[in-house]
Image (tube, rainbow, N blue to C red):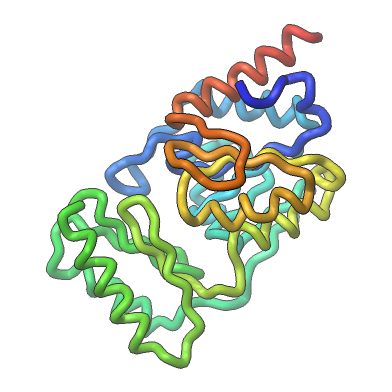
Amino acid sequence: MFIDAVTLPSRAILLDVDGTILDLAPTPLEVVVPPDLTVALERLSKRVGGALAFVSGRPLAELDLFFTPLKLPSIAVHGAELRLGDGTVRRSTTFLDPALKAELASIADDKPGVVIEDKGYSIAVHYRLAPHLGHEVRDEVSAVCARFTSARLEILPGKSVVEVKQPSFNKGTAVRDLMQHEPFKGRKPIFIGDDVTDEAAFEVMPEFDGTGFSVGRHVEGIAGTFETPTDVRRWIAEMVRGGREKR
């Protein structure tokens, strides 16, 4: 739709996962990966010489679990984990204070439908099952973080979720790192993302003459918008199909 299949050999494709190539689910572990998507991603990776990567808030282990047998280069937990094209994995050495995580986790104690996701490097408070509690959850997360005045913390609002992490890493800094390594080095990236946490990656696209596309929301300064994850999956299928036709 936006990028012709002919241009793919000079491109790197960077994909957010939840809300971008996968439909959002009531809880993080309930997402469904269509079998044909995994096949299409494997073919797309070959089309771009391995320069296809996930850029996700999920831990690396979850990405590998959901997309098995694929083990793509990946930016995980918003940049706390990075797997390069040669399989090398880099991990942040900083974790959230256990006391902070315990207080944030306790927010769900009296709120049926609120789900806690502890990623080690960050902790997410999901309220998709209890949208009426969103304002209360956000206020309580802010109040807990304010009590930990000695910690450097970043609060990330998302789609029915609030996530807390340290500001020393984000998707943008991780994309900048990934693009220094083969097979991504020297290519023009295409990044597709759907949420506020993806804006850091959109911001670094101009550094590499790259292109950004959002899913379901307007973002200033990017090239265009897909309406839904279904449209992104259709685009991936078209890129793969176009490549087969040209051979």
